[in-house]
Length: 176
Image (tube, rainbow, N blue to C red; front, side, top):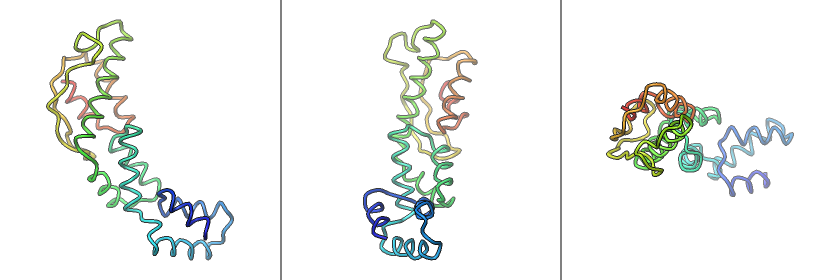
């Protein structure tokens, strides 16, 4: 129990993650249940706290969109409502900024690969502003102004953003 307590005091774990760790350590189901009950009762494990921390970390450090964060939370045993609450707690301005930065970088990368200039004609990237919104799974996040791109380039960017967990239709709307 002390090992699990030390782990949980140093990092956030979901209940499912800790259950799997205890099983990997060869701890019996009955003993694992007692340890998990203790960890939850003493608030070493709190799935809501874990989900909020995890969502913020994945947005800021991994630059993941809401869909990818949601899927990852669900894979870690976080229920639908808790995962949605964690996404709702994300900073919408940060979410939009990261989305716009990723679109700018990918658009310039696609243009450079095709031998074209950056979207705004210099290496600073396209001028995208006027964005607002938040990290809803199906909501519209941003509506910036940008130079139109040819459709094949837009599709490449939308696919890239979808792999990152951002809504492709929102990406296409931004790229109009």
